[in-house]
Amino acid sequence: MGSKVIEESFEKVVNYFLGKGAKKLFHGNHRAAMVRGKFIYKLPFCHEGVVANFEEEHIFKKIAKHKEAVVPHHKNCVELNNVCHSESNHQVIGFARCKIILVYNLPVLLMERLDPMDKYDKRKTEFMRRFDGGQFGVGRRGDFLCYDYSRLYEYNFMQKQENLENLTKYILDQFRFGYFDVGRVFPTCNGCPDEDEVAVIRNS
Image 1: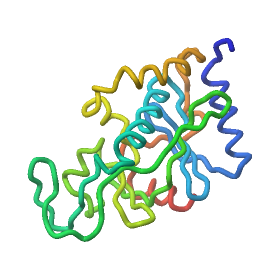
Image 2 (image 1 turned 180 degrees about the vertical axis):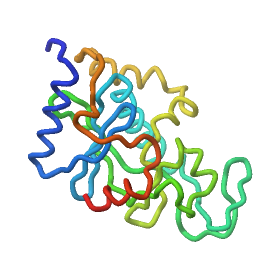
Image 3 (image 1 turned 180 degrees about the horizontal axis):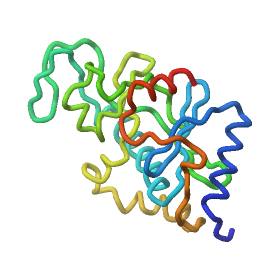
């Protein structure tokens, strides 16, 4: 298959999900999000977005799924060695479940939908706020789950970098990446959402 302009595939994917009843949410620096029912779709629109999708799938499948990167969350948290210690309230800090699906050869990340916390949510601990600005939501079991955690790979899981690069190389070779005005298609939300943006997500 020859190279394709990322913008062409991206807009095909957006229209595909719109046809399935999904709604557009926001875009960040590298990906845009759509929602349908219990699921969020993360659509990459640049090289970094493709890598981020594979990183999050890799973190979840290889680490978070086995609870290796999950720590207890407690209301009266005292952090020791970056781990929260106190009486348990049966909640955990972890990662939203996800997997890669290919749509028009674009690697879309299918992620479980969470009830998002806005940037001022008082339930967040300092530990949570260090996860890429505290981008957390509440899962169906009441757990506090991070939904934007690709950057953690760069800092915590670099020993597996070669395997991850092999996963992404084929996809990256399929597209020509240039400037893409994603703001033409999606409104912007960079980082942790504010109260108004949370309301949009909840009502979508």
